[in-house]
Image (cartoon, rainbow, N blue to C red; front, top):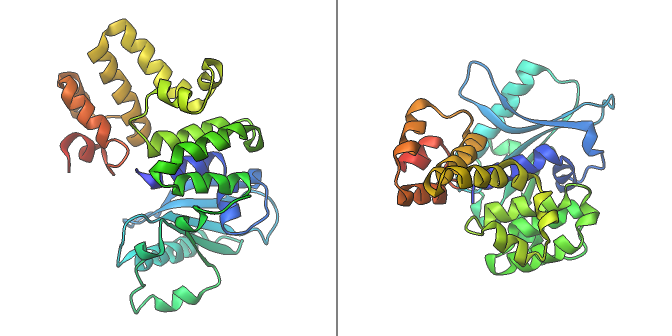
Length: 279
C-alpha cells in the first residue's frame, strides 16, 4: 500500500485528521494543506499545513509519513524544515508530525541531528497504537482503519460505514478511499457487497465518480482491453500527473496480462517509471 499517497489524499480533503493526531483543536477550514518544494535544493516537504486564520498562535505543521526504515530520515526532515523556515520566514510557530506504522520502523537520528529529537515541536505517531482502541473520534477512527490488519479491515470498514453520518458528507468516500488503497484487488461490486451499500450510495463516492465510473463506461464502448487501458491511464494520471508520450505508447501496445501487472504495482510504486518498468 502506498500509504504516503493515501495520507496525502486524506489530509488534503480533511486536515482535521492531522490536527487530532497532534492534539490541536482548530477547525479544518483554518488550514490549507499542500506539498512544498524548496527552491534551489532537491528537498520536497511531503505535507505542510499552513494556517489561513489570523490566530498568530496557530502553528504551521510539517507532516511526513514514514513507512520504510531510513537512517537518514531525521537529518533530511529537519534540514527541509529549517531551510523552509529560513526561506519563508513564517509568522506562526511550527510543529513537525511524523507518522510511522510501528515503533520498530523508526530509526534513531544521526549524532548531528540528535538534539532535534528533544524538541517539543516534534510529534511522533505510531499507527499500531490505534489498532485496539475504541470510542475514537471520527478522524482517529480512520487511523484505526488504516492501521488495521487485513483480516480486520472489512469488519472495521463495515462498522464505520454504519456510522458514516458522523464523518460528514464525505464519510463514505473516506472509508472507500482507504479500502481501495489497502485492498486494491477488491472490485466495485465486492466493496458494495461487503459494506452493505446500495448502488446509489456507492455512486456518490468521489473515488467512484472520478475514476471507476468513467473508466468502465468508456471501456464498455471501446472494448474490454481498450477500456482497461483507459482506466489504468486515468489512475496513473491521477497518481503521477500528465503521462509522457512514451508511457502512453506503452499502454496502447500492452497485452491484457501486462496491464494487470501494472495495475498491481500502481499503489505501491513510487514513480511512473517504477510502475511501467519495474524500477
